[in-house]
Image (cartoon, rainbow, N blue to C red; front, side, top):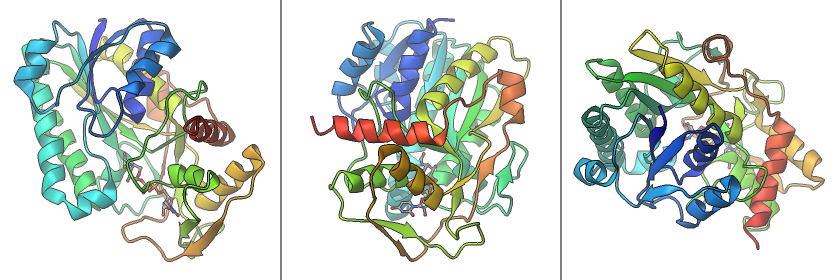
Length: 331
Ligand code: WQD
């Protein structure tokens, strides 16, 4: 099992996963339509790994073009999707079309190419408005909070409907943060960042006036929301562990939550960012953001015992790497 089709492979998580794949001896075959990234990420991956990256600028919805461009593949990691919660609320039909059509198209390619495994990029957002703060893979999926989350729930159901010729592993990401230690790849938000950490780093860089903390009247230790912030390099390595496992798995479909197993509040993250980078962040407390849940983080016993994977990097490292990446964008 060597040649792995990586859709959206020049994106934030995709690019870090390509590095991890190459370092583990796999050969990523990358497609990306460059809608949410830059071609310079390809060169950055090549600089980090010292290897040429097989890349095709293609849209994952175009199964015919993908099929005819790539030769044989042994496995698939499907990242290509729109992923902004806020934007999905404004443009629901664009999200359903883009995310579901690309998934159906890549499933078709995987079956045509007789791929043995299919790793699907899902999200903690599938738990919706769950009452449970610490979730496991058995936690019932909540009511979808937004169209983006709904496309992830539907994607999981399509893959779990079975009848595929490949083994499927669903990876539910919690909150990916940080960047590769080389500061050559990292998160490249389009426009105003929706997510916390890129907004923090852009504020620290003076690109944004001030960070607004969305609410401090939640029932948590300091009133701000709790999340499971996982370093993107750890998350990337979870994909390698999943691919390795897929070669021996008995079930046709399996699901894993990918997080650190720890929850941190928004204020704890801000304080960690300030401390490790020796700076003061300009922020104030504002109103709650509609749709936010109070607390969510994951138990990690299943992924640790089955995939033998555990997050290694702690929050200070994530905050240091995020800041080094932001500073690299000034060069
Ligand atoms: C985290 C916390 C905010 C911005 C979503 C998706 C998930 C994944 C990550 C795609 C919340 C607070 C944020 C700000 C703030 N996306 N916050 N001020 O909402 O947990 O998860 O993004 O893969 O699927 O659901 O992440 O980073 O937006 O917010 O106070 O300017 O930071 O209220 O508590 P979220 P987030």
